[in-house]
Structures are given as structure tokens and as C-alpha cells.
Picture 1 (tube, rainbow, N blue to C red):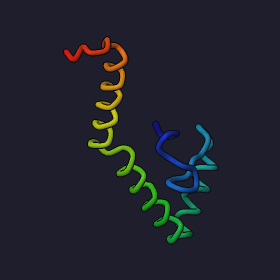
Picture 2 (picture 1 turned 90 degrees about the vertical axis):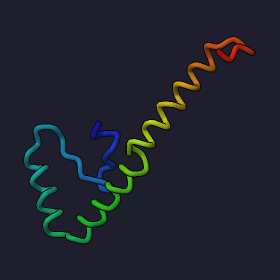
Picture 3 (picture 1 turned 180 degrees about the vertical axis):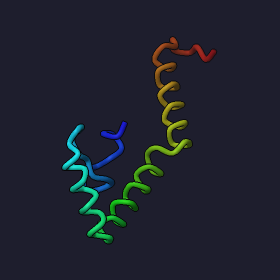
Length: 79
């Protein structure tokens, strides 16, 4: 979810649920500070590519399945 993906102040800005004033403040900050906006956008892109792209997620899921299956198999049973 968003809490896992967004690092507040690094790869995005987080506002409390229902706090439209905080959200508006974030938009004003991003509009007034283009360099900060670009830094956050680049960090967000990098984080998604490194941690959440399809190939990474498939590899992590496969590794988890392999680990769980190896824990269930008796030693020497490779079926």
C-alpha cells in the first residue's frame, strides 16, 4: 500500500486521512519548490523500479514459494 511505497519527504509527501489542509499544504510546497518536486519524483520512480516492478515482485514471490516448499519437503525428497 501507499504506506509501504511512500517515504514521507523522500519519495512523496504524506497527509493524514481526511486532512485536506495538510494535503493542500503539500501541493503548495511542491508548486513553489520545483527542485524539491523533481527530487521527490525521481526518488519515487527509483523506489518503484527497484522494489515494485513486475520482475522484482515475481522473483520475490518465487523465492518465497521456493523457501516455503523446501521447509515442507523431507530431506532427500525432490518431487
